[in-house]
Length: 283
Image (cartoon, rainbow, N blue to C red; front, side):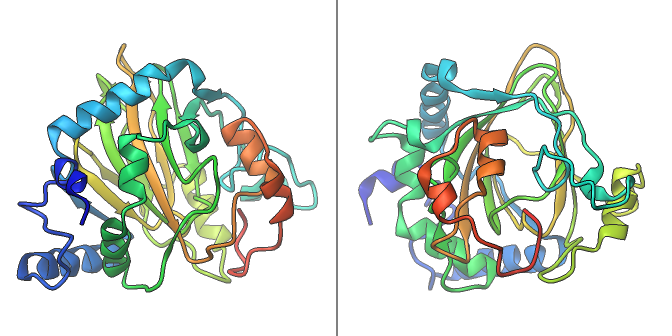
């Protein structure tokens, strides 16, 4: 194990480098049960305060390079209307978005977040928690371990992620708002469940749950199968989040349309690997 890891993760409380330890086995069991039931699990104070400060500084030093998107999107992170569907179909329901990313390709070589993402210990721990092996780091050079920024009045509407598993590390909370809401396991491979998605978009909150993250908390989340959003940011303080991501397919990246709308640019790799998803779900 690289000694730097113990300056980032609270390994005393969460010895994830040793999957055979009693503490870690119990933690993995807890996370897996919560993920199976709620598609989401939270580990409090996972990141040490000093490392949290470093990540915040990294982001703020490059804040001018953040791509802020104000495009309206549908739940499948698409900004283009597909008129072959009925007018009230989820694919034709668009919501305002004001949200930004410091893209992964802009990170410095010695970045705290980049280093953490590249560690095998974290990858294997997440794999154990989701109960799937192997899983892979995301090949998308813009999105694999981006920092997410929501400025005052920022909002992230209901959507699904392109990657199967997302980690969320809260770096800075807003004054008010910015609440994470989600609908556990609302779709699955081969089944979009459009009727239930439409109910949520229409305001039905029967399936909606909320999660309030604190700085340093780690959230493991099945974002591809769970409709989710972040409510409007209120006050003068921005919301900062680190979002390293993992996938089942080591080859796949975002679609060109998704990359343009969310990350502000499209690279050759997005065109080269733009093929239909094996799970049959819309991106």
